[in-house]
Image (tube, rainbow, N blue to C red; front, side, top):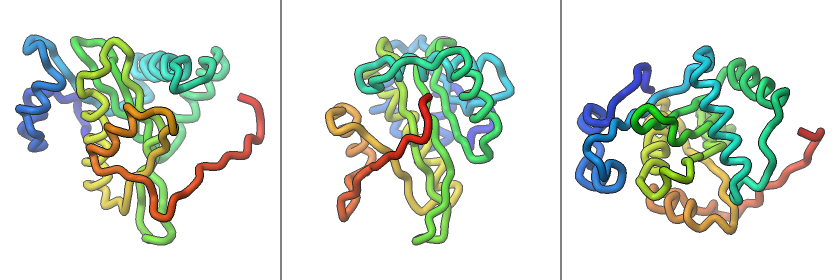
Length: 189
């Protein structure tokens, strides 16, 4: 995984990404500095970015929720900071946090190996359509491969065709046989 912040110009070559297509999709302005970094929950700037990006996602039509209050944000950061298997990646453009993923390393009993669940994929509205979501997902895929995971899972709303199209381009598909995502709430947020 990325232990240090990486500027894209070096990132392209280091990880063998297709720089031509990614450059077209992500960096229309060659003067933009695009960074991909792993979250450090002991860094207050990273914690603020987590809170702000998650709030924007929750308030978005695809999030369909209300943002957390101060007490909820404190629980969020404390919970993520203390979770032993959280993997959060940020993408920044010219120093501005543009998106992130929150993922969790889990264990598959059928495969007897770890798997990665991508829980949140967030790109701020003003940065959408530039390939940043794809970049974040590719970093999760690389992380899962390097950690010998058996699979990567994620949930997507039935009406979020934009996200579904992105996931399909990266090899994600519906499970066979089809599965439902069920929930039982134990308390209010």
